[in-house]
Image (cartoon, rainbow, N blue to C red):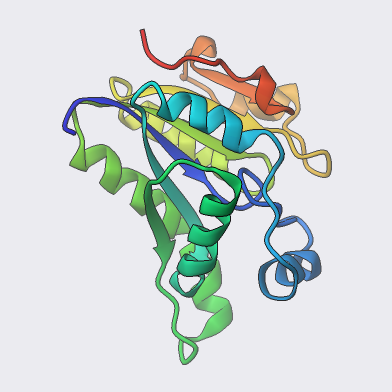
Length: 192
């Protein structure tokens, strides 16, 4: 719908246990082990979905994982939504391409969603493992009338401290962003 509320959610370490801060664990959790959901996130998202919130899942994961990620969402009760994954071909220059796309892929997907639905309000949910906070803060500054809230899950191995948070969220009103460790800390209702 052209109006209403939407959640743009990161996948890795926001709803799926990935361990992005440890490349070896990330590869094992992506290609060798069964996918695991982050506890409590599906329940919080379902509560929001029951209020009519639409969901968009964004990730730097390759599109080849779409089916497995969809299965994770169904198996653990995450709301249906659109998936925005990165394009990846084995013949690409892997290291250069991975580094470039990790920086630009999610940002472009978020920008496209915000521009595609200019009359919707968005809640951006991510984690402190990579650059979600930076990407989301930039989106909030660029689209202040659309980005209503930013929620960043604190990863124990790479939490955001007060100094880094203040720098990242410069010029983003303090009431619009929140760090959390457990999904129960997130509001049960979105919207006015």
